[in-house]
Length: 582
Image 1 (cartoon, rainbow, N blue to C red):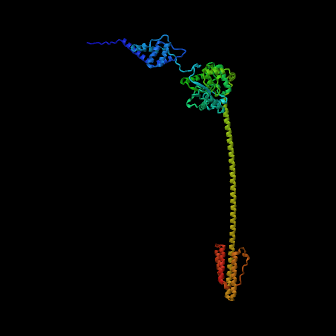
Image 2: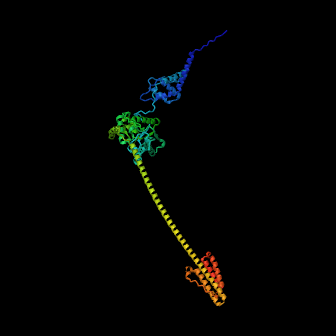
Image 3: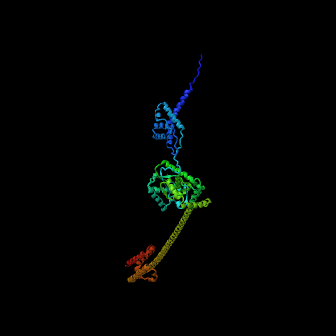
């Protein structure tokens, strides 16, 4: 037997109701704990006084419950005020406080859920400033224009947001410019509301002015704050870097005629170098952002704002007071001018004094003429002209420097050439002197050589003469010897031999004397005649023979003896002969 099973489902009605109840309770709990209720309550409490929000019994019940749950005194006080103003009061507080059971909790959560879903939330006020400023501002504001820049001193109207940060736009390095900033410091020092914080633009003259102000007013550096964008001056496009006397009146006339109350018209022509062409409305947006930021994050501060130009503070003043923006130029600031405690009343007072100023009206009339010229293209870029002039000055200075350098080099080259010529002349003179001295030394050497050669020849001649004399003396002695031998052999007389021997000796002595010292005069001495052979000469035969031998020996050694040695030898020979004779 087979059994069949049939699947049955439980009834869905109770489950669905249970699920919906749980979902409802979860949603009610989330709504009660969610911070949207205090936010909505706060918006309803801090409503605009001119349009009070509508308060219902459900809203009051929800606020009382949340105030008990969170302990908020603000909501409780607001609800009490609502009770006094509403003509239809809600249920009594005791009935709500006594509902501690399930029914009271569900009723309360249901009211809170329905209120959170159906409440009419008022628009939030995000802090964006609304102009004119009818309510008092949270902070006190002092407006100041930076001191005159180098471009302004040179008559250049420059608005390029990048170029004005260059040092060409720095605070003018003149005593007058510094004096203007110092005078502004004295005005601020005399004010009872001394600045607690200062904002300045990134323009070079703005930064320099802020530095001087911080030094003079002793504002700490953490209170000297740069503003990167919102304080930038209005860009004038194609007319940028034009002559101040031409462009400034034209811009004033353009805004007066075409800008309108909201500043949306009067836009200058565009440029190609990055300079913005802005209307007053564009600058209006930046200034509103800046003031809204200050009013949102600070309160009770004395804020000094340093603008790079005179139109920025004038435009912000017109915005605060509700003056038509096309007439803001009547409030323009002069370089270094400071105005204290800017608010709606002070600005309206200044506007009443300046709107019919003859100078302002004359500037508008002059600006109309200049504006027509600018639109016809009759505009000159003064900055480019100044830069071109500076380039020419730099080129001229460089050319002068090069010229002076070349002249200096030429002078140095001429000096070096002159020094070289002088050195060459001195070297030539030195060489000539050395050559002269060398020639003189060579001449002296030749003369000494010739003298030595002459002396040598004379000596040789003397020696030759002496040798000849010796030979003659030897021959004479030999002849005398022979004759003496004959005389001895005859033996006639000893006396006669002695006489002849003496005569021979005398002859030899004379011949020797002539040979030694006679020189060239030897020819003047007569040679002794050969004696006749006689027997008396035999006595000196031996002596004569000895003399002859000595002479022969001397002739052989003459060439090796000096004249002094030869003279000594002759004397020795004579003495030897004399000894032999004895």
